[in-house]
Image (cartoon, rainbow, N blue to C red; front, side, top):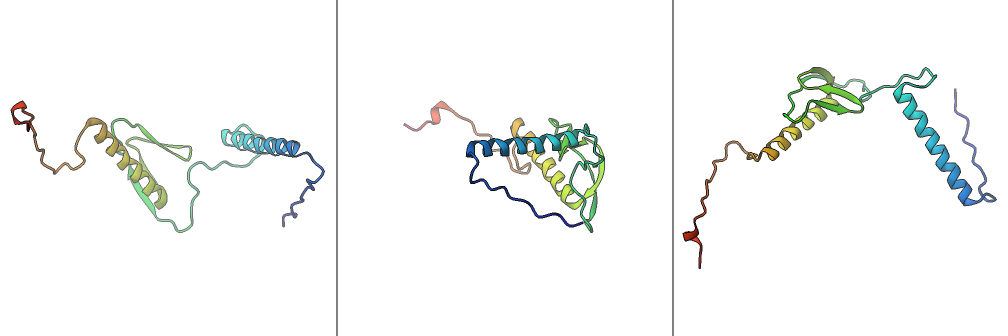
Amino acid sequence: MAKRPRQHLDEAGIDPKIMAEARERAIRKKADMIAAREMGITDDDVDVIKGPLPMKGEKKFTITLDLAEHSDRLMIDSKIYMQGGTYTVGERLYNTMREMIHRGWEHQREIEGKDGNPYRNQSNLRLNPNDVAA
């Protein structure tokens, strides 16, 4: 069924302040409807899809989450993926999860004060008051 053409309102004789308020109410009403649908508290039978939308022909990958100590889950598009869980996901989500895991481990190394390159030798610098230049 084809959509009807959108009807435009002649705004010439309407106060701009009233039009702005009407637009704001319409936007708020639409946002409330979307939020209610996501929470499942509406009467309509529209299914809410959480997580990324599936794409045809997208490769599937299996990933087991090995998160840093400070994390216990990944939350992507309102869907929770728990630490240690094994998930089969599409390529886009797989790449996103890998990046989030990597950034989590980078953050863990940073807050622990560890060197980013584990193969780099420490220089063990010592400061001695006698070595100060005059």
